[in-house]
Image 1 (cartoon, one colour):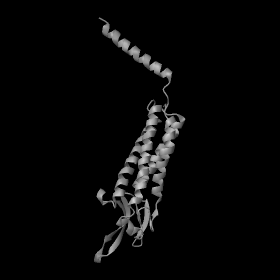
Image 2 (tube, one colour):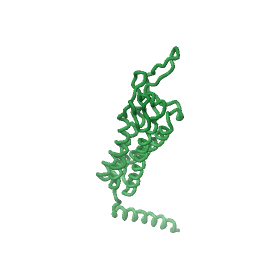
Image 3 (cartoon, one colour):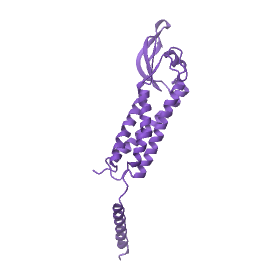
Image 4 (spheres, one colour):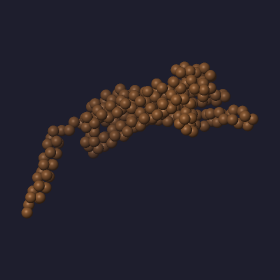
Length: 220
């Protein structure tokens, strides 16, 4: 089975898959921000949360220890986090699409040319830029009441208070940076240039085919 990628292209396909999976997994895991509420650990992503308070008997607050997403898009605590959800999700989808095409290029001949590889690298740069923008927007939501309750009521935009950034936040940002810098550069050398011999053979084959069809049509 002949690949349409060079040796560098194979490395690019592997790194593209790693960065796409790392960023997308981090996007879905609620471990971007860690804090505590009512003596229980609490964690957030952009649209998911682990452990949340509910009203119990006697109108007292109790913590439900489970993870889940917000019931609706508008239930996400702040506009900044809503924007972060959309932007980061779009970036992850773009990286996954390019990674899938790159992996297919390892198994299929003439799927990815040199120019196609560069276009896919440009798409990776855009995807990484979207995820990076989402990471930059994330701190703008730390002043929402829900986050402040978890961060000792002293958090603000770009001020964590008693909270800490989680590993998933760094993983998403690191995957985006790798996609923008490393994968985009490697994509310039990923595809194979078509060989002149192959082009001549293809042209001759098509010419002979047309000549045979024309000869068949002209015969009485």
